[in-house]
Length: 188
Ligand SMILES: Cc1cc2nc3c(=O)[nH]c(=O)nc-3n(C[C@H](O)[C@H](O)[C@H](O)COP(=O)(O)O)c2cc1C
Figure 1 (cartoon, helix red, strand yellow):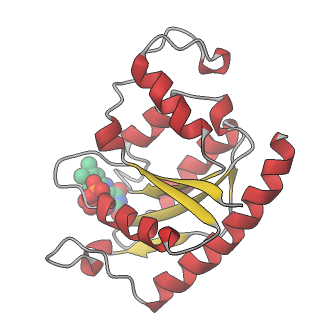
Figure 2: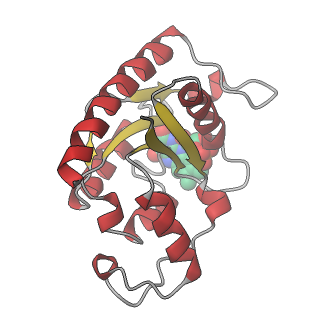
Figure 3: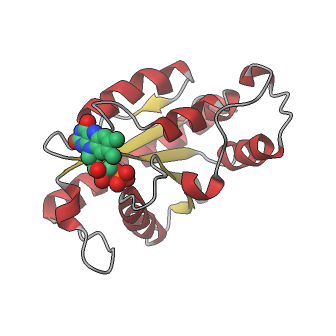
């Protein structure tokens, strides 16, 4: 049986580069028989700043955009967040998208593919781990951290990983699948 995984972008600005990395990891997952992958691009999903009147825990959603987002996230057994770093922290769109929901995230594993300058988005990742654990998610320790990511993006906007990045992605996906199976049992 295939495991549903959602790849989620974290940046939405015009000219953003995170989408090229998200496209790459989505293709990697499409090649693997154990995963059923969907890319959830926050720029397309276009959530406004969190505007629900009730706490997400109650799931009393009043807006169509929230109901749509809820269904997409409910459908996931695992997530990959393709995480940029803005001012040593996580970009606002991903925090906003996380805040919209609560139970939909619970008891599910998340892997990070982070990118940035010399720190490769690590500060952002460490910060977002605090948030996802509050939602009951399991941020797995294996992650893909890409320093100077722009060097791997060619003129056709394709992300071309080196051997080290490919190795870390393989390790992360292997572990993420184990967590997804284990936490599926917990959710039942
Ligand atoms: C508002 C802003 C803040 C940034 N802050 C950081 C930072 O703290 N650390 C870092 O490594 N890169 C930082 N950068 C550079 C980004 O890593 C780089 O622009 C990257 O492409 C951003 O992701 P995006 O293209 O998906 O928006 C920043 C970029 C922007 C636009």
